[in-house]
Length: 99
Image (cartoon, rainbow, N blue to C red; front, side, top):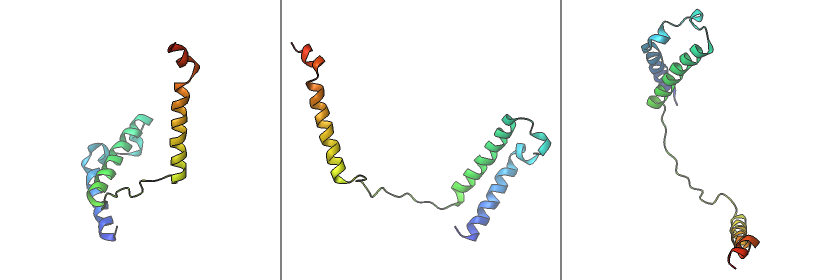
């Protein structure tokens, strides 16, 4: 982000906020409840997000790290999975059901 983009972001945000009648006529005395405050914040938040999507540059990054855990740990996890499968095959209740 450079100064030009920040200025553009500011201008778009101001324009969007001023386009909502709820926000242009806003006074401190007009907020009487938490519900009203939440509603006003929702309008402001939406304006900021919309301006950010229009102005702030972004790019998608591919996930390059397919192996997050060390190989030894993944091998142990596979071994434990196989042991659990064998355990459930020879579990007492399963053996009784085959008789």
